[in-house]
Length: 366
Ligand SMILES: *Cc1c(COP(=O)(O)O)cnc(C)c1O
Image 1: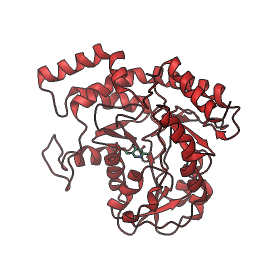
Image 2: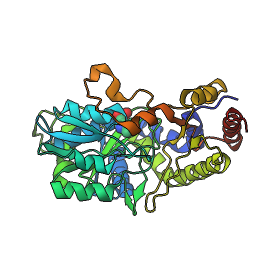
Image 3: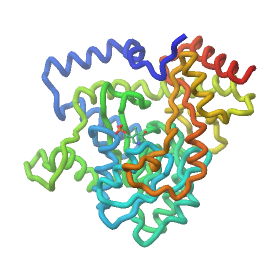
C-alpha cells in the first residue's frame, strides 16, 4: 500500500462541483484581483475566527511580516519566539530588523511560559506564540504576561485555524492572528495564501494598504512603501468554499485521531498527541507523535509506503546561514529527534488508517 501524507486531488473530488462552479464564475467574469470572492472570504474567515477583520495576503509568512510592521516592531526590538517552529516565524522577525529571542517549548510542542517570562528584557517588544500542530499555546498566560509588560502579541496560528482555548479562537487573542493556506494546511488552497485576523482598525487599515503597495484603493493615496502581497481572488473563491466544509472536517479529524489513539496507546515507546489540558481544543492539523526510535521508526514507515513528516529533524537555529545562537533548548532537541507526523486528513480511508496502524505495530513487534 502507498499512503500519501495528504491527497488534495481526493479532496477536490469531494467538492468538485462547488470548486468547478467557482472557477467558471471567476474565469468567465475575469474577476482576478480584489473582487467579491476575496471580500466574501475575508468576511467569513473573520466570523469563523471571531475577529472584526480578516485581511487576505499571499502567505502565512506575509501575515507575520505585515503584523510585526503594523505593530511598529523593528531594529532594536526583541521578539520572543519558540525554538521549535517553522523557520518563517523567526524569519519574519529578522526581516523587520528586530532580534528574535528563541525560547524552548514544553511537551505539548508549544512555547514554555516560564522561559518567556525569564527572557523579557527592557528591549522586548513582542511575543510570537506559535500554535503548533493544531493545539494552541497557553494564551491566557501569554496575554497576562503581555499585558503586564506592555508587549504586542502576534499569534502564529498557521497550524491552528479552527482551534480555541476556553472557546476563544486561535487568531483572536493577540493584536493579530496569522494564517497560512499552503496546500498542506488544514484550510489549504491550490497554491500559496494567507491571512491576518485582528480586532484593531488601525492594523486593518495598515495591512489593507501595505498588501497593495501602500495604496488606499479608495483615495489613491500611498500611505507608505508597501508590498505586493494580496491573496488572489481565485484562491479566495476556493478557500471560501472549503471554509464552509471546515467545521465538519475538523470533527472528522478528531475521529481519526481517536482511531489512532485507540490502536496505538498501548505502545510504551510512543507518545501520542493527546494532552490532558482542559479548555484546550486540538484540531489535529498534524497528528504528530513521538517515537523513542526516531529515524528508525519514521524510516520504517516510509519503507512501507507511508508518507510521514518529520518536522523538524534539524531545528532552524542549527542552520548556519541563519546566524542564530543555539543557547540550549533541551525539549526542542528531544522533540526534533523523535517527532513523526502520521497521515492526517479527511481524504484518508479506514483501510489506510488500519494499514498505518498495522505497520506501526509491526515495527514494535506487536
Ligand atoms: C506554514 C507555516 C508558516 C508559513 O506559512 P506560509 O504560508 O508557507 O508562508 C509559518 N508558521 C508556521 C507554524 C507554519 O506552519
